[in-house]
Length: 439
Image (tube, rainbow, N blue to C red; front, side):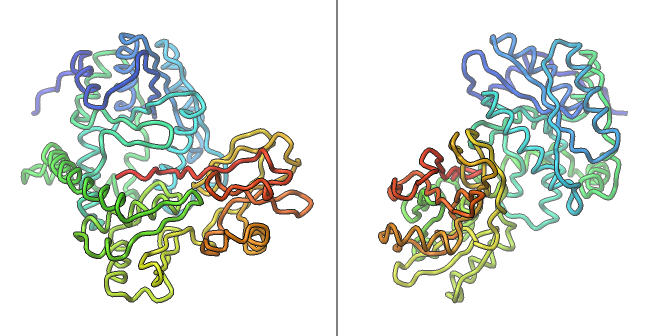
């Protein structure tokens, strides 16, 4: 029988926090808390750490509305945390029920809710309780998926988003040790029934880990392998950053040019990461495309069989022989539908643009794609804009007012012009993709 692991103490946790620093004076840290032992242990330790540094911990629980009792469970988590003197908020997902690929869609919705709260409340750090066993499961899941170097590096301890950072200080800590921490600090937890549902691949992988451990492939070694690959990935990322700086041009209108010769002459892994980075940025995505899709695109580019272009990850990739470059822009048919907006509010559209709505915008206005007709109107007023690919213009944001008029919202940049503003003069659009162009 294995000995019961010791709990994490405050000094050990302080060293773990150093690995995901630095932090500002009096840090405000949001902690994602599901109510399980991992997140409860993280929250309990984080409260002590932030108090020691004159800061604040805020616990956030996402209610996905996937089960009938999910709201009750979220409220119970809140009661337990408030009893410990921890500020707590429940963030509820609204909209139609999740159908296919439930876990992946729920994860995207969860991060969106958490990041939106952090932005609104000025929290620069969102702490996540992923631990060593989670890391090992992620390695195996991605190995089964055929992931490359980046995927097998699994979860990074620090991830930069538009307005904040995701930090994972517990990636070297076992699940058992976090449970011991909850017991030591008298932190009650609840078990998510989804963690026993073998319909989910992660649950099936988890049940295989004890068998693999008998052959020496335990969670510790898998997590260590992911760290080795992460270090190797850092070296590759430097080459990726160099290629992007020399051969890519990301435009404030939300598209990019990529020098074809520079791409095809680069090492395979570097080229794949460059494509992944630009497609994620231009497509307004959170996660990059799958490796096999990237490899198929790279092969077509290298073999010069792109012809009229390819679509991937919500983007159109089209060669320009005149420029010797690849155009990467949003695919017109994949652009988000028009969304109702409120005057005077800040609004996110299509995962790419932050739009500040004028206080005088007509009630009932919507933000949607500029479209073919709208772009024709823009180029009639500003002929200089015809130098831009038309497919780029079609996917720019516009204010659609109830009268049927379309007001273009040209992103802040070199082509911005007052003649195109009209009644939306104080409505502004800025290209700010969900995932920044980082490697």
